Length: 387
Image 1 (cartoon, rainbow, N blue to C red):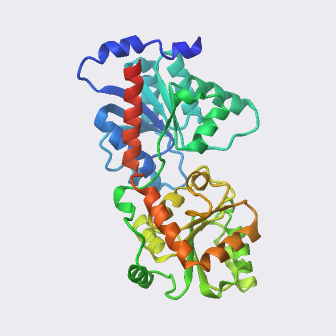
Image 2 (image 1 turned 45 degrees about the vertical axis):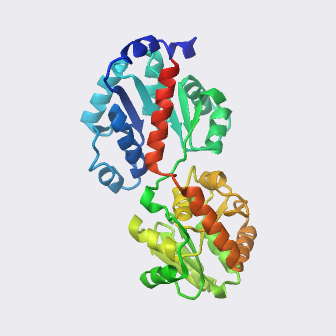
Image 3 (image 1 turned 90 degrees about the vertical axis):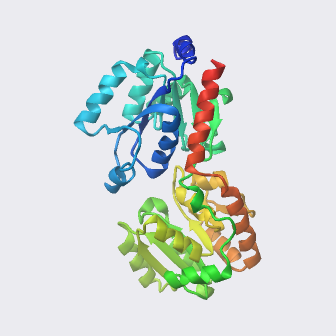
């Protein structure tokens, strides 16, 4: 009965569909990440859009630089004016044709879902991936909210399985390729030997070694301590490791490197995107030892630059995009010896690296932020046309 209530105003929507007005949409998202903003820019071409950001971020820069050139109106819920507007708009939610929720499990997302149900406004839920937890009150909430969504947008099979686990039928799931890439980020072919040498001249990547690169904050969750333990087991005279990200664990990593007399390891702090991509192009293999990543957009970036990927099985992007032996390798998280063996294997096989590089570039073609927005628009319009 409640599910039917979610479509109770569809006749009103259909009556409006004959005019030329744009559908009106409210969007809720955690914070203004560039890969979200780019999608909203596409949607703003088709809809009368206003966006509400929770704005809980780990870096203050995320709030300002991502939205400074936005062409659509946006508000922050941790600002008094933004919060007041959000409350006012949710009291009259039927002024909107539909709601798009990018995190339905945060408090404001839960609230917006419930109001949508009560006011009979269709809402769509996006999910980039997730780990199914033990059955508790939070999981019951997910089951209820996902189940009453009009559509669920999944970033791939892993995300779809996540929705399935909370009772969402296949008929409600729509797919898109989650990414943080623009068209110009994706190479057309693998980096040539001459170009790789050029990028090594511009970076700390050595000219005469097989270069492994990893990217992420130096925090325990990323598993870089496990990578250093695997590096200790590797015959790394012919290899070099670049660790890029910076963070609270840097001193611990430096101490481990010194104590264990590890060779050919370079630690670097955070790099802006343009500079980071130079390091990708200077490298040979991307390795990601994470203990848990709900997605892991660095996987997309590395693949777009033609790098084979070695990742733990606790990175959902890798589980979605990496096929063992074809464009990289997956290994069991915490299996330090397994990680070391994969690095040893790929460092000794230049032909394998070339094949994987080409396969990854091919796989990333067309996988852009703009494509996500266009796919959302197609799915949303199909939903309304069917109704």
